[in-house]
Length: 117
Image 1 (cartoon, rainbow, N blue to C red):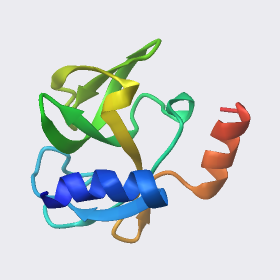
Image 2: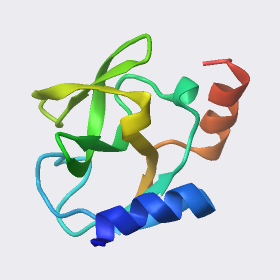
Image 3: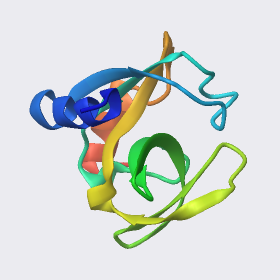
Image 4: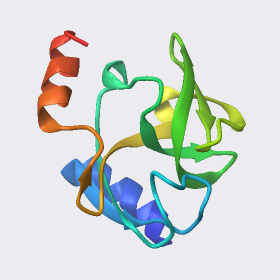
């Protein structure tokens, strides 16, 4: 089992995990080798623009949500180049922090979970 597959398992069991970025398609948000903090979330809290840990075409990657259509999510890189549409079952985690930079705060997560935003 590779590190990304292990991260899926840790997210399912513990609800959070930190992985290292291994590519440059999400620069400037995430640079190569930066630590990406992921949490498991209910799909209802996901928003367009969120960076998510997702399986696209068999590959596990961190890319952003470019569009949402009911239970389908368009996965794109930082430049909005679309990889494909996936179901919520392919999204394993939400990026909440990169290194020491907060991407989605705990307060924002509470508002999302409460349906405020």
